[in-house]
Amino acid sequence: MSGESETAWLIERTEGGRAVWWTGSYWTTDSREAIRFARRIDAERAIPGWLGGTWRSLARATEHVWSAGPPAHEDDCRCETCKVHA
Image (tube, rainbow, N blue to C red; front, side, top):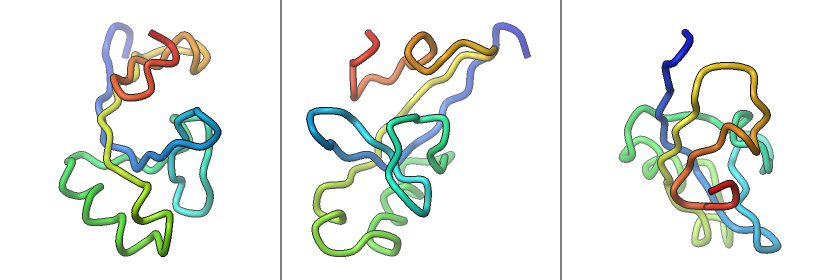
């Protein structure tokens, strides 16, 4: 898998100025723990079904790319939304 990358859509919101992603049970700061969707429409359709109240209005589908290999999230994240690691 060397040199390959993975692209997926995540459910994201901002908490305390940082991006967090939905795992299906809780919000995490580690995008690798989040539920991954192959298509944007699938992530967008999951938001109203999984999230209620305020979370629903704050959450959005965002595209992420991870490179293959063992680097930590800070070195690995190439998401265009959070730009924390750009």
